[in-house]
Image (cartoon, one colour):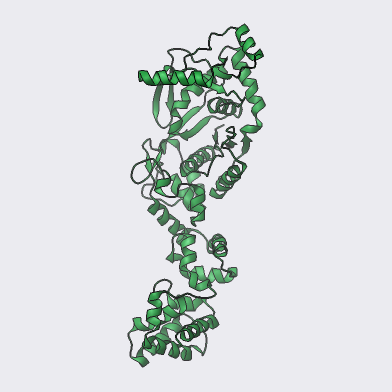
Length: 469
């Protein structure tokens, strides 16, 4: 059975690159009818926080990623201790009593010689008696993995192809720190092996870690999984996606009013090519059916925020049901301080869902439908202060008194006012728009009058006339 996993560290918000890794790993498992594991790698005690962990889980759920098993590394320390001891007993690891100062001195000498630093192996040859004596003296120590000399580790990456790395590039590395906490390269092997992970899908920045992990797999006689390293995501300037490109976390995009299925869909297409060329909108079920690692490009993907914005707009206009859109929109409306019942919001969105691309933009654009009191822009005030506008509003009040108010009725009234006052259509519409929305651009007056209660429309026109004295 195929088993994949996503193993984030709760040291910050869920980055878009990590979110894509989670999605690809999830899709791969689901496509093969396998198991998907979520494992929180919280061994970094200084940087890992409960708050980030909770946000991480929340953002993954929001994206629509469900996991079959859940683990926290901080709850598995007893397991790592057992396997570290096994490595020591088999001669694949040893205690290292070198001080920080000694290691720093080694590093400096390497820099002076202009060569990459690798540990000298100073504690490799300590006798059992020397080790026991140092421990008795209370000397702090790390545990290092004994890397075989001159070995070239070779593996076939499912995305990058044939990779060969000489172990002399890194030397003996630490698997347990002096405070007893295990390091990433050690625990990831123990966890993946014991959890039965068959495919490790992660970012290409982990390629240098892979030979170290393969050596540990071999030393513990674990089966080595298949590796698939995803290319990085670049900003539009072709540099690695970072904060200087704007929002880079899932949380940022949630708060800006992007929809989870739209972001999920968009991230899938960052570096993966679906079999149907030209098509870009897919449901999660379709993506599960279509996704393969063979379709993942080995070259970096470029993040295009305008395309994401466009795709989000498509989901708002065409993909989401009206009821689901209302559910998504309500929290943004409430956060902005507006109160409205769902039925009214539904009527508003039914008429306006094609006028905005994010929910946050929608709240701002649809403000006239929900604001209790309007503020007027300078341009709107300039229009209202025109004598023609006063005449328009007064005549509108007279004509609007009878019957229902809707889009068709407003258009008829505008034509009558235009004829009676001998004005151009735009002068009439501008006066009404300024009084009803406080702006000269935005939602159509006819749409506003089609949805907003008639008494509210009348109230706003009277307010504008009162303001003008």
